[in-house]
Length: 239
Image (cartoon, rainbow, N blue to C red):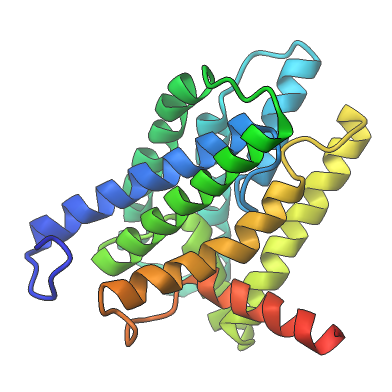
């Protein structure tokens, strides 16, 4: 069984790649619904729309996502200062797989007849399921992670703040910046909308379901789970 506990390194690498393909599918499908992507791809999604609106050279969501994550990798290097190891650049491998898959999946998903808001919501829900499966498989494989996840871990480590707090703050900052950029340059919300909040809330919950289903309750908590729990706790406190 692929998800068994005694897996070889090669099997775990295959599992990681499958997970990254699911993540790419989730991002591409969320983008196709036009209801907003998950927090980290928000900025790349807005930049893609800006290129289209102002007739700039077309740069795909996958390419912008690669560049944005590469910038986060640079941020890790700055935060770690003299403690950087050459292996940090291995994060570019899963990043390349994920971002290429985004652009590949965008082709068939762009043909979907998402003409009604209901159809967009259904597709958004499917994208959440894709994302949760992908993140679960990637984290469970325990091989490599993309810079978008590792940057938050490094930031939490350097600042000494709880990971869940840093993750929620980081994602909220991305959403706020993306929304501001979209409103200023596109005169509306593109790339960051209700779907972004849905992704932030539900992906972590679904990951928890997959962990229980495959007996991984004792494993390390994913970034999405930490964020979902933090947002739910805040909601209950406000209520």
